Every structure is written in structure tokens, then in C-alpha cells.
Length: 121
Length: 107
Image 1 (tube, rainbow over the protein chains, first blue to last red):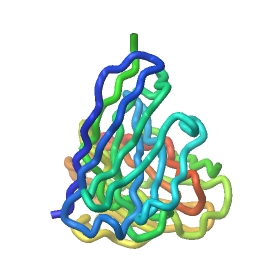
Image 2 (cartoon, rainbow over the protein chains, first blue to last red; image 1 turned 180 degrees about the horizontal axis):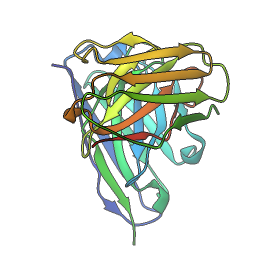
Image 3 (tube, chains in turn brown, cyan; image 1 turned 180 degrees about the vertical axis):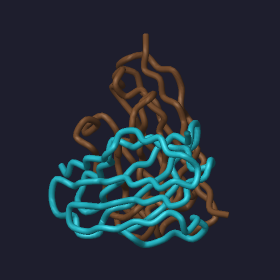
């Protein structure tokens, strides 16, 4: 069964850091680009970042550029999101999502259950 | 950035009724438009890919149409389990963007 399992969400103070992880199973992890998508409480979906299957290419939404870093370890089937200089507006459920095909621009066919990040003093 | 405008924001429909949700893109995105269903406290689920392509395991009452800038998700013969929020998503250009969502309620 194809599965994604996020972890690492927590309550953190403004300006703090957090590292999210996403463990993948049931598919050839290195063959697919992976994204992070977030959802603020009671709000819609917002794409955050994507990384290619090889890890060579990464892209970010403007609001997190310079603060967040996406990475992956294909030997461990894991995706990561390092979040620095966190702000209140980063408070959200963070989902990892698998792209349907190999490129970075495709539908998301598998989503994790999400991990909650709360930025508050 | 490509803006996706979904309408309506909310729709209340009786069981066995029909739901039509539209998604308009701010520029031509070809067929790179996908639809998701999100039930309360659950993660999104892919319903339709590339405008009109069906997804294995998704009931046939869900269908999509459109290309270019105008797209439609149709739910025929609505069932109680279809109560959810529906989102469109474009993967034509980075950054990926989502529509604001349409909440469907069963009367």
C-alpha cells in the first residue's frame, strides 16, 4: 500500500525552527517529485514547496523562500522540510504529497495525514 | 502566479441531486487542472486529474470537464458521503495554486 506519514509538528515560538519529516512506503520513492502543502486552520490549501525525484531541483512559494528548505533522502525514503524564522502565519497543518508522475508539475495522487505546526508565544 | 477562482463557495443539495462546481484560471492552463475532495479532519483525495481523467476507485458519479481557463466538476446523484469541501488545483506553472474551495452540504 502506498503511504505517507508525516511527523515533527509542534508548538514553537515566533522566530523558532522546526524540521518536518515524511516517511514514504509502497512505491519507488526516487521516481517521484514530492511536495509540501499546508492548510491554515479553517482555510484552504496552499502549496509550499516541491523537490524533484533526484533532489536536484527545488522550488518554493514566495512567502517561505529563504526560510524553508526542502530536502529528501532517497536511501531512507524520507522527505524533509526545515523551517526557520517561523512566523504566526506559518501556523497550519502541513501535508506531504506525492506527485503522480516524475516531473515537479503534476497532480498529487497520495497525501499524508498531516502534521500540525503552531507558531505562537 | 495563476489564480484559480472557484464558484460557488457553498452549495446545499438534496440526496440524488446534482452538484456543479466551476473553476476559472487567470490564464490558459491547458488541461493541467485537478480536483480534490477533502472531508472534515481528513487529508485531500484526488478525484479527477488533467481536467477530465478519472481516478481508479473514485465513483463514476464524479466527472470533470473543461480546458484552457474554464473547468467544471460535476457530481451526479449526490450521496451523503459526498459532503466535503472540493478544491481545484493547477499544475501548469509553478507555483502550484489551488482554488478557494467549495463546501458541499447534504440537505
